[in-house]
Image (cartoon, rainbow, N blue to C red; front, side, top):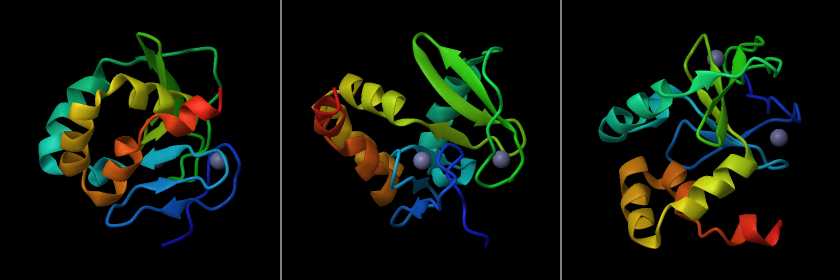
Length: 135
Ligand SMILES: [Zn+2]
Ligand SMILES: [Zn+2]
């Protein structure tokens, strides 16, 4: 498999442990291919993602998996993501990641960590400390 590149920094993404997700070591953006989510979690994830609508001002970025400029910006109630129109993978930038972490209460963090599996769960299960220190 070819190395996946960060759509923003263009450097190789680092694969997460026990997950097909990958994270950028530089901008900390997170790439979540559809198969990264356990069946139980993707049931929750799909309707969530479906509610996002296209934002027309942003240009498309290159998808880490498809390699073509198919990552379109989508938004919903203050959240902005990049979704691949080809493979349905989702790119979550550090700002959105930090926002998600802050909104997930510590009680749900444990549940999410379990539901998403080790690698991906660790990203969301992390306390918001990282995002807060960046502010
Ligand atoms: Zn990056
Ligand atoms: Zn793609």
